Structures are given as C-alpha cells and as structure tokens.
Amino acid sequence: MNNYNAEKIQSLEGIEHVRLRPSMYVGDIGKRGLHHLVNEIIDNSIDEALAGYCDKIWVTIYKDNSITIRDNGRGIPIDIHQKEGKSALEVVLTKIGAGGKFDKSSYKVSGGLHGVGISCVNALSSLLKAKIYRNEKIFYQEYVRGRAFSPVQVIGKTKLRGTEINFHFDETIFSHIQYNYNTLVARFRELSYLNRGLTIFFSDERAYENRNPKRIVFYSEDGIKGFILFIEESRDPLIPSVIYMEGERENIPVEVALRYNTSYNENIHSYVNNINTIEGGTHIAGFRRGLTRTLKKYTDESFFLEKDKVYITGDDFREGLTAIISIKVMNPQFEGQTKTKLGNAEVSGVVDRVVGEMLLDYLEENPSDARTIIEKVLIAAKARQAAKKARELIQRKTTISIGSLPGKLADCSSNEPSACELYLVEGDSAAGTAKQGRDREFQAILPLRGKILNVEKAMQYKVYENEEIRNIYTALGVQVGDSEDRKALNIEKLRYNKIIIMTDADIDGSHISTLILTLFFRYMKILIEEGYIFIATPPVFLIKKGNKSSYAWNDRQRENIIHQLGGNKGLNVQRYKGLGEMNAEQLWETTMNPQKRLLRIVTIENATEADRIFSMLMGDDVSPRRQFIENNAIYAKIDA
Image (tube, rainbow, N blue to C red; front, top):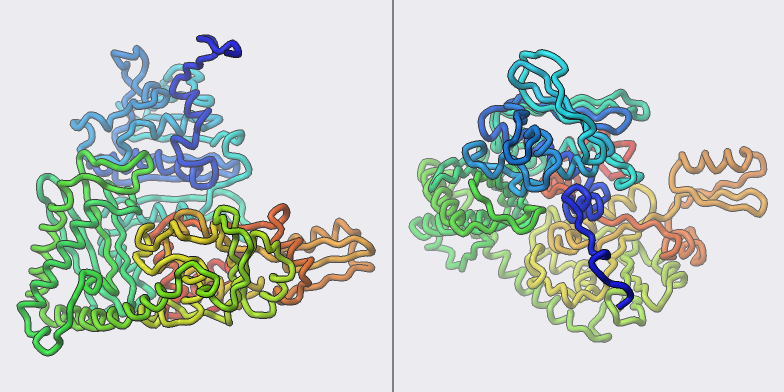
C-alpha cells in the first residue's frame, strides 16, 4: 500500500488549514479574495453599527499596501476567555469559529455568521496589528501569519472606544495584486446607503500618477431612498418620487425603495444584513409576489382594463422597475460561506405582507402615479406579446444543425464546447483576417456588422428582432429566457465555453465592446457570472528596428520598448488603427494564440454598481457619462 499509514495523516489546526486552502474561505487568491479580506473586517464594524454601538468607520490604505480599519464601536473584548485561558481578542483572531455573532445577546443580526472572518484575515496576513480602545485604555497585540507574536499589552490611555485592525496581506499567497480603489469605493458607498446615519471615511495614501492621495467620505441621511436616486441618475423617471416602504413583521425589519423609469429593464438589488445577495432568495420572491399581487388587484379594481383586454404577467409589472430590498434577519440561512442566496422560508411571507400593505397605501394616496405605472404595465404587456413572437423565431433557429447556424458564422470543427471558442469580431474585414489566422479546430468567428443595437434603450421585442443579436443567440445555441437562470437560457446547450469579444483598440471598438457587454449583462447575465465572457486585447503598436520587432499595448509600453532598442534612430513605429491592419499571422501571434494572447475575463464584482454604470454609459443622459469619462480618462476609452 506504498507505506500509507497513520503517519501520513495530517491534522491541521484552523489557521494552517486556512493558509493551505485559502480559496475555501475567501473565494480565491486573486482580486476578489483580496477584497474579501477587507470586507470581513468591515463587516465586523458594520455589525457594531447594526447593534447600535458604532456610527463611524475609518479605512486607510497605506503606500506599503497595508490597510487599517477602525470603528468607534465597543471594541473586541480583551479579558480572559475562561475556556481557552487567553485573551478573548486572541481567541477571536486565531480560532476558526470563534466570535460574538453566535451569542444573540451581543448581536441580534449580523452578516458574518460563520465565525471565520477576522481569523481568516489574520491567517492570510503576513502581519496584523490589533488595537482595542476599551475601558479608557489602549490594548495592543501583533500577529505574524495568524500566530500571536506577543501577549496583549496596554500601551496607553484613551477616551476613545472601538477596534482598530491593521494588516498586510501575505504576498506569498496574494501575489502581484493590489487593492482596487473603485471596488472599495463602491462597497463603502453601498454600506453608507444601507446604514442610514453611518459615516465611512476612506483614505487611499498610495501614490497615483499625476494625482494626490485620495480621500472621500460616505454618509447618507436618506438611506436606500438616496441609493435609488444614485443608481437611477442616468435614467428618466416615470414618476418623480421614490416609493419607500418600511415595516417589521415577526422581528424581521424590512426596507424597500423603488422607482419606475422609462427603460425596459428590471433591476432589483437585494441585501440581507448588508450582504449583497446577488443570487436572490426568499426575500426577492416575497417582494415580487407582493408587488404583483398588489398592482394586479389595483388594476383589476380600476377601469384600466375595461378598454384594453390584455393578459398581464408578473414580468409586465416589473418592466422599468428599479428596487432595493434590505432586510435584517436574526438567523439568516445563506447558501455557502459566500452568502449570495437567502433560504429562510419565513422571510418570503414577511416581505410580501409589508410590500403589499404599504404599496397599496401609496397607490391609493397617489392616484396619478398609480395611473402612470399601470399605463406602462399595459404597454409592457403588449410589447411582451410582440417579443414572444420574436423569441419564437430565435428558438426555431437555435436547433443545433449546420443549416440553422448563421450564414456568416465560420464555425470550428470540434463539437466539444469545453475546447471551443467563439470570437465576436467587429466588421467583415477584421473577421476575414481572423478566419485566416485562427485555428479552425477550436476557434469560430462570427462577424458583427458595425455597432449592434443598444439594448439599454430598446424595447424587448426590438432586441429579439435585431438580426445581429439573433445571430449571437443562434451561434451560441442558448435559448431566450431569464438572464440569470441556467435552465431558462438552456446553458447546457452552450456551444462554446469561451465567448471572446474582439474589437479595434480605439474609441469605436470600446463602444462596440460596451454594446455587446450590455447585451450579455441585460439578457444573458449568467454567462458573465459563470466566466464564459472574455475580451481580447489586440496590440496598439508594432515597433521594428532592424530584424527586431515588438508589440506594445499602450503608450508606456511603446516608450519602454523604444528605450530598450536604443532610441528612435532607425526605428519604425506602426500604429494599428484597427484589427484589419494586421495580417493573419500577426493577429494570431498577438491576439488569438492561446499560448501568447492576453484575454481579460469579464466579471461582476458589484452587481448594483455594474447596473448603474451600464445605465449611465448606454442611457440617454450625456452629462453623467461625460463626468464618468473625465474622472476615468486614464482607464476608460468610451464614446460619449
């Protein structure tokens, strides 16, 4: 048996197991996992806010990439834990499953219920320093890779109270990555709206090119009502006011804010104890049922349907709706440590009742708004009938046979989806080059004619009638359905496991990429969430000197290459204005060869922020789009 005995069995304590298998605890060892560390510490401070003991949080990133998070809560207890025989602070920081979240006399509601948060951060940090402001003293302890470096010490006196955690992530685990300013800003803004009256001070002390360190303060008096106005800033409101509902049933506080706009998309963002439940759950089901039941009852009892004999579905009542649902649950049942779907059965009925009662009151008190909403619902119902016919046309063409595939599709010879790639290529010229340069075994090419329809501003039936969009659906082999439902979209029939957007490296190309991404985000979001969507990165420059040639993807790389080649003398720099200017060999070498190319996978770090940005970039309002471009000019190339 190859000496397989008891000596081969390893018994790892919690900290060692976290370090050995970090992805089990924080998701991955990339950017998402790194930001998860920050969120775990922030969540502890937010829990203090939920308990009524904290109203300020300070977050600072330093030049060495360490980060400090301080709050004015009660401070982690530092007295001796009877069972462990050491300070409660050390127990919390070194024992997986230790924390105050399990004791409901300490925290009635909490996001971090698994007791692994701060101990995981400690385990995955090369150095962590804890300062506790409590009992008019400052208590201090250091940890190295999850182990206490010294006992808890008193290092001074103070009138402050709270917890301060400074940590530097372990670069042997999280290598070659840094905190993303925009990711953190989006989360802190979100938390300030979800916790009315909470102030979050964020300071990024890292050096920025041509910019000073950044400081920003997040605070909201209006809570999720203000959140709605923020994410709706680029949409035209159907009714002027935000409908706000707040109530409590069965010890479950419920907050809902919603507003209808003139778009054709439904955008519902849900939170449980400040955790963004991106996969929804019972609270979403309760909200939809309460909304549909109440609006249908109001519609049936009014005169609206007397003239228009239209069959209305729940989807019709939610077209053009943006809503935020925030609930607090004492014992939330999340699916997995990532906490993205709520499973508590009792929550559905609670949210249903709160929404039903308060929405009916609003409709009766605001008959003009009610009429406007119902009129939009009737238009949505009629458009749905037209969209159904357009969807059926796509479905008939999605039968997997060579004859049913789009005529412009240059398919690959392999029938194994896990090995196949589909390039969505801008224009016939570039597509022709890509067809010549590709590996026909596993790479397929679908040319797109110019800029596809902007689905952000189009009615659903117009989307399904669009030839380019129909071709994308048909080539992929998926069905038309709920954008977040695997079964509805029939993902099992997806013909390619990599869908690669390949456009020119210029402003028009960026605009086309954004149009295609908007289509996937609004109509096939599950493909983004499950990692099927990528963006190709063609080079911008070809630099030649003698028999040497190099490619550059930006101005800085170009200058570095010129310097390495000894300056401009005898140098030839070619700027690619489009994919069509490369020959097939160059396109393969730089952009399509799996051994050399650089693909950027498209992910959704914050669904609410993604929704807001897509609406801003692809909506009708130019001013916020212009401001976004001015603020992000170094990073973004987006057509205003």
